[in-house]
Image 1 (cartoon, rainbow, N blue to C red):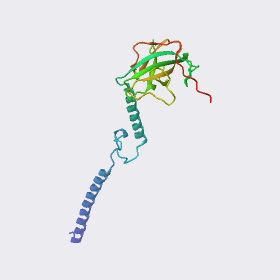
Image 2 (image 1 turned 30 degrees about the horizontal axis):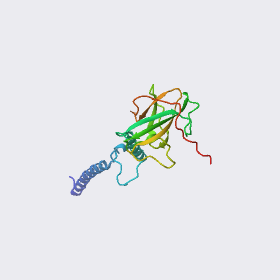
Image 3 (image 1 turned 30 degrees about the vertical axis):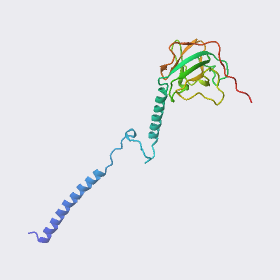
Image 4 (image 1 turned 180 degrees about the vertical axis):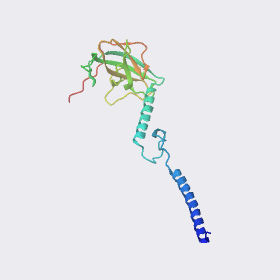
Length: 213
């Protein structure tokens, strides 16, 4: 027959095993709760609003892209309900910081376009007016050499600029354009500014060459 002390030892060991098992289950529960959750992708993280942390490289690129898209949208809508009137165009031989590429597959020359823009918004960008072939609608780019003119067609003195939008502005725009193309269209962010092809005259106003002094 088992003595009382031995029985006590066995019961004590039994209860210790039960308590140890409970402790292990609890430890497992804590460990599972402490397991970190997957981090959502950067695109799903709202950008900090109050400088709580520095932006990551990916977030900075996202912000820059958003700003550029917003700016492009403003410029695209910059003409608003305004209009552009072409006063004339001609082969250009005066001063310009542009010059045709002599190695281009299509031989080009400089063409000057005299135009007036009115009713536009402050976001209108004269550099975004694009010259397009009058026959096949092939684009030959934007970013002309711009020079502001008075409303009566004279070159404005250096440092003087046209009035702010929506006041009418007049500009001389110089483009490199195919030599064999007799006419062109103008576009602004996909919107046609000319109803009919504009014929290029032989000559017209030219900018003086800068003084050598």
